[in-house]
Structure formats: C-alpha cells, structure tokens
Length: 376
Ligand code: NAD
Image (cartoon, rainbow, N blue to C red):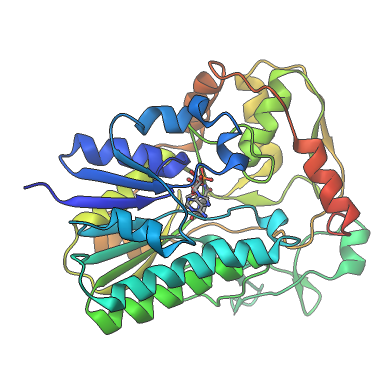
C-alpha cells in the first residue's frame, strides 16, 4: 500500500508542486490548508496552485491553529510535511502576533498531537528557512570566520551597505548548518522556534525529524499577488507592465535563488531516507546572485523597457548576503540542485506570461513599511 503524506500548506507554491510530484511517485497525499487570502486572494477557486491540486489530493480546508482541523486529516498518515506558515519577512516585523500564532502556535499543536500518541506518523519534515542564520557566514582578510549581526546604521544612511570588521570589509562565504543562528526578523525567529519545537518533540517520541532550511525558492506557481514575499514576482509584475523597478540598497546585496523543482527534489529525498533521525539541512542553489543582476536578467528575458532604479533605501530586518553551503545535504542525502538561475528564470518568465495579475499591491506594502519606520 502507498504511504500517506500530509502536507500542511499544500495548496501553496511549494506544497502544490510537492503534492503533484509525490502523487506521480505513488504516494497518497492529504492537504490541510486554510487558503489564506493573502496568497490565494478572496477568489481562491481561481488560485493557480489550488487549481493544480484540488482534484488530485484529499483536500481539507482548515487551519493549523485549530486542533480539530489537524484531527480530521491525520488518519493513516505516515509522513507530515509541515509547510503552512505566514512567510513575509518585512510583514512579520509589524504582525508579530499573527506570525507567532500561525507559525509557532500552529506547530505547537502538531507537537501535542505527536506526543498524544494514537497516530501513525513516523517522520516530520519542516520547511525551515535560511533566514534563521540572519546574515550568515563571512570571512575576514586574515581568514577568520565571522558572523556579523546588524549593520551600522550610520554607514547605511551614507550608502555603505557592507559589513566591516576592524575597519576591513568582510567577504560573504557559503553558510553551513553549523553557522551561528541569529534571526533578524520575527519571521526568522518563528522558523527557528518551529525547528526546535519539532526537533525536541520528535526526539522524545522516536519520530524522525528533518528540517530543511530553504533559501529563496522561485519558479512557476509562486504567488504573483502576495506583495510581501518573492522579489522575482515583484520585479516581474512591474517589468511586464514596463513600470519602474525599485532596487533597495546598492543592488549588490545577494541571495541564493533555488528553483522549485530542486526544492521538491530535496523534500522527496528527505521523505525516502530512513536512516536519519533528527537532522537539519540547507537547501539552495549554492550560488549567490546579486539583486541587480537578477533584475537585469529578468528585464532581458521579459524584453521590458522598465527603468531599474537603485534607491539606496534599506529595510530593517533585511540581510545583505546569504548563500547556502550544500556540502552536508550532498554528502548525507546525495542532493544537488539541477536547475541554474538562468534556466530557472526563463522557465518562470514563460509561466508568468500566462498569468493575469489583477492588482499589484507592492506600493501599498512599501507604504506599510515606511509608516512603521521599517523602510529607510
Ligand atoms: P505559500 O504562501 O505559497 O504557501 C503557504 C500555504 O500555507 C498557503 O497555501 C496558505 O494558504 C497556507 N496557510 C497559511 N496559513 C495557514 C494556516 N494558518 N493554516 C493552514 N494553512 C495555512 O508559501 P511557500 O512559498 O509555499 O512556503 C511554504 C513553506 O516554506 C513556508 O513554511 C515557508 O516559511 C517556507 N519557506 C519558503 C521559502 C520560499 O522562498 N518560498 C523560503 C524559505 C522557507
């Protein structure tokens, strides 16, 4: 008999792609998702990712904050992939209560279920985030590893966005799983809290736990309407309409963009692996791409006449650089990403042209940050 996987947040970007991949590989999939308006809009029946899965999985509309909803979906489940979450770094800075309730309280209910017994769960996989490292790992000129915290605001105001140690500029290096944990936003803190809660609980119940710390996931199916996540969506919406694109800092800040298929590949490998008990892994492309390079690639691929404007503004809680060291997941699980950023972006662009975005709320989201003193 096929194994049954419960995916919370399975109607979202990662969850929908994972659901389809698992079904193709013979798993049976049950999804618990509250079809959050911020992701799926009020008219969720038209949500691209919900449409993908609604007739393929056993779907339950419900909330991870509600014990009764969890109880409805657990029958016969061997594996839980916990993806449901509030996901906007900037938004989390002024919606601490909401982020804590969904991400921490939701996960605490799962912990209670796991310890109550009377279930068939043998493994839990959590979508964690690279944001828990904050800035991640840097190296000084004399080869020392340094984990910087916050940037000096007097430098930021003057347009100097890099990190310094003893007046020397630091170089960002790949962040491994042994790097210091230094969440710089409420969102990041909730992701770390989820990890620790599940690690402790699963260990006590002899349930396998794998935390996967995703870098910036992108690709077909990512929300084009949620203005709080995903610069690739934000940029592409504006480029499509030849509107000016605003780039924070000096554009040289960098991220690790990992394609959706590679993320689903990592989750599926983690599902299949039965050797590991309580582990965490980075999942990324392992490559740093600057935001200005990303915007230029997208502009070219979309043949857009948009002006790219480097604003020099910066958001509190944002990091400067972070890219994944994949040594651990390569050695332990045999994972390596297959889609590079140029191929991934062109597949994203091709998909996004078939999607209609009725309203672009990005300007409103910036206004919210500015009003709260979080965008300088
Ligand atoms: P998404 O917003 O597309 O999907 C999240 C899903 O969770 C949505 O379908 C939403 O309706 C559902 N949801 C939200 N609140 C819920 C609640 N209270 N109860 C039940 N369902 C709820 O996000 P995604 O990009 O697919 O991210 C999935 C997971 O991966 C999240 O935990 C996120 O923190 C993590 N992650 C994502 C990225 C990324 O770049 N996409 C990076 C790091 C970590």
